[in-house]
Length: 72
Image (cartoon, rainbow, N blue to C red; front, side):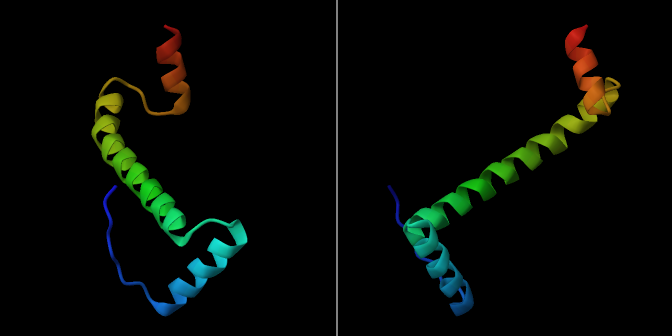
């Protein structure tokens, strides 16, 4: 496992301390989870940006369109 070092504002560190204590997990665990979520959301948005034009070209514009496509 790799190690990274980052600087955060004092206020953010205090908030991280509070959440770490409240959830009884390490600050590293909280930071790792926040970074994991950021990466998942970023990757999802990139994939969505590629897929939306393709879906729209096939007439898929809404959730209902998706389900109709799956049913046929």
